[in-house]
Amino acid sequence: MRNFFPSIYDLAMKPLEKRNFQKIRKEVLSKAAGRVLEIGSGTGINFPIYKNAAHVDAIEPSKGMIEQSQTRKTAARVPIRVHQQSAENLEFPDNTFDTVVATLVFCTIPTPVKALEEIIRVSKPQAKILFFEHVKMEQPALAFAQEALNPIWKRICDGCHLNRETLKIIQESGLKVTKVASHYKGLFIVVESENNKVSR
Image (cartoon, rainbow, N blue to C red; front, side, top):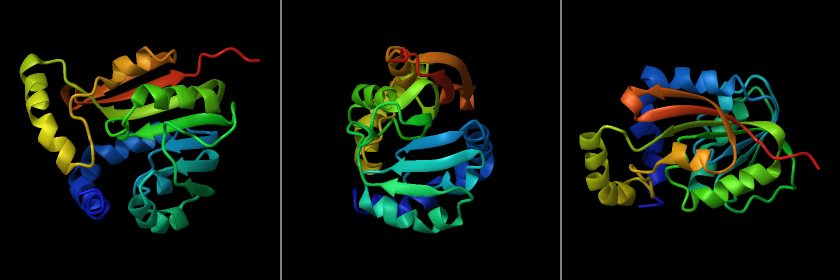
């Protein structure tokens, strides 16, 4: 399924992107400035949206996704370099990035706590860390449905977890959360945060 997933991802996301997702992505990415790290760039759906970044380093573990992102990379208005690597093992020096962006990716990262540790390491003190993610819902009936669907959902959707409590993971990581906005009755959230580490 992993080899097949990149070829259907854009088609599956198209109805959502046409509705509200493009608006949300534009709002999030408008805050991405300086040297930017994008976590899990997938098919490059964010690439044409960047306006204020000086340079984007995008990481993506899937070769198929990277190949599919080349057209959007070429169409981007800012310089973008795509690296095949995982979020848990970032091959960048400490204190490299001014902004880190993650959109609809923390649901699939196998070890999100480790990924956040790496994000904190490679981003500068007070760097902006921006997330747009889907999460486990607060309503008990909907949360129960997410739990029930999760095993088959993970198999179909390349390891995506419907029931991941991503906001809680972010809050416990040491990042300073400055704003949380909810969409689709709490199924999706936008989180603005800062790297709270001390300058050395």
